[in-house]
Length: 280
Image (cartoon, rainbow, N blue to C red; front, side, top):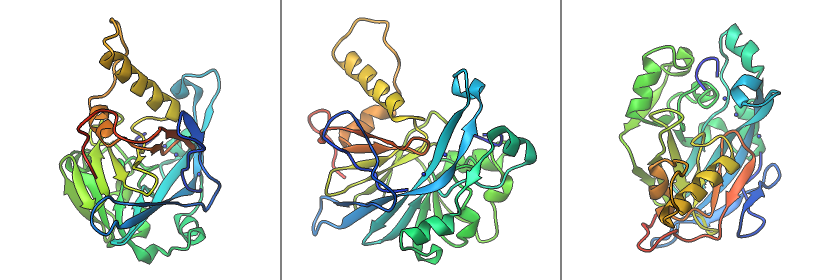
């Protein structure tokens, strides 16, 4: 969400190889590695950064919906990477609209055994205030962002301006897909915003997609996958649409997909969805 927008702890884990599982409890980790050379090992830990209350009209329900605000800590031989950083302070109207409850980023990091000064890199899925709210607490830490996303944020009326060009802000602007570290890849996933991006992390348990707000829920993501399957099977129209970027994501065959506003984990049996899939 933008101003008047937003996104709880533990590691994403699948109970089995099929369907949508639930995440592990607070503080858990999911070990992993990239597939090249000495197999650098990465782990992913989910951070609970609070929640907000989405009004019924926005949720499309007869009642409001309480949504978690989730970030993810990636431990990699190259360093520590933070994917999203929580809810920033907004204007009174936005605060009243979403009624956020924040868990301090520094406390969530400490519970994971990490200090703010240990972080090497931040990746925000996009720059709405519920995803980049902790960035000003991390001056000097490079923030990886799509060039189009940063331009939109700086244009005004998009997010909380103080969360963008704060003292010590350092941005690494990218255009599209980029390999950040071995086994850690940014994938553009536009839709919620034009500059939305997700992060694919290679682990021992298979690739994990940190999807941010590419979809609000695991079930919505699963519905898009099923629409893609129906189209590939030649089902007669009409069919629901699915985003073009899903084809690229599925080349990597993510074992798990985790989200910014849903604690559920989308699980699969692992492995690419079609022959000739790309590697990490």
